[in-house]
Length: 86
Image (cartoon, rainbow, N blue to C red; front, side):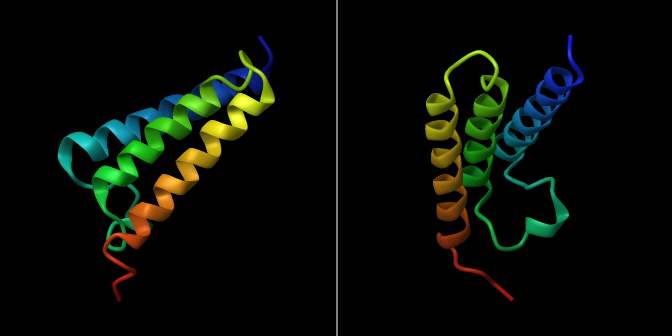
């Protein structure tokens, strides 16, 4: 296996674990985004992003881009639902 494939699998697992943690506990594990985001939307976006990164080697690039852009839209919603708090 190539190192790139192992890194993508590791990144996908970390994203899915972070998304599942945010959905189950209602807390975001990354300390730099805890305050300004809504945890359920953030968890859903990390799950979709982990799915996209995990499937990058198995599917066409267009499928990856659609899933990744959907994850970015979900992250934008997570930031915009409560607004950026100071």
